[in-house]
Length: 131
Length: 314
Image (cartoon, rainbow over all chains, first blue to last red; front, side, top):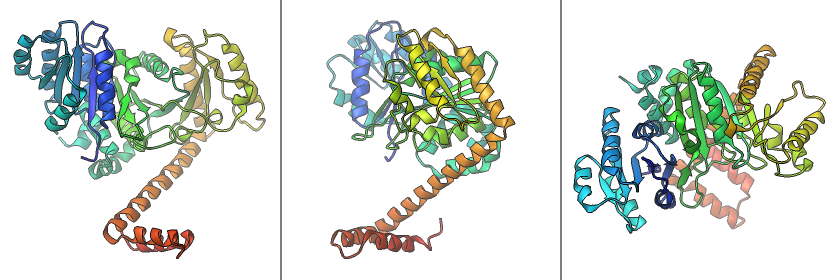
């Protein structure tokens, strides 16, 4: 591919812990991707609107507050409504193992929990791009 | 519906996709812009430039909000640097504009410079055209944080707002050549910080030293985070446009900008022709070897290379 992969890194929900999101953003940057960082406390609507305007290949979200079961599927749903189901959606943060199957069923392609090497995220993105 | 029609219709996904295509040098996008070029020229293109951390994104956010109160459609192109080592980038200007994300009258697009110097990306001008066709009344181009010589923006925008902040240097900095010469409007941001009036005075003194100036750029003190001075700044931006229209300067400036753009496009095409020719024939590699071995001088080498692409049709 001769164009850089564009990734929106977003923090939905109300927690202010963005260290993880920033580490991921930096790692993706160093892997040659264009990372659009939107900052803290974004609503699903804001995230989807930004993803559409930025025409990204990937939406990567991070939550540490426990609201993932509500917010991740909401973003997937809104993206579908916009007709943007060719965008890869992934999530990360403190996600209990028991919640992962449900989130995947809802359309989140993969979930990355604490301790994941950043290279795993990069490899996953590169092999699972939908366009 | 085709992309072109969807763009004319104000479809956001079509707009987003076309900007990506322009960024990736896609032939179809160029054809669409060619077809729709007659629909451009209606937007007031405003460049926002200044040092890193000077408040460009925050100020752009506030200006966009002020214009939204008048129900104007606003486009924003925010450029951030691409790493020369990995080709990656962090485009973080949206962080200061998150309230605008849900406003359907605003379209924000972040771009990496992708190796282009001068404060903009190679595709910025193409993206401006897409937003113009999309129907924006105002298009803001936020440059990368600039130092002393990134002046591409003045060749792209109708109005350049140069943001300065207090404490970056003495009055000698203000009289140096380069970016200090390109402001149509100067905004001293963070004016609640110590030294702001002094910075404003130094800029005014710098401007006073040029007796040939037909229009003296205004120098405003603003505090973007507190939304102070924004109405004034919007007024000055509009006044600059009226001045240009009345003095027949707008046409002249757009002509001169078009000239720069055409030369740049031609330059890119010639370079790409030379490189493509080299891929098939290896001529450039051969001549370069010759130059290094002192068998031929670089000037004659240039003539030979140009001669080799003379008959290629684009």
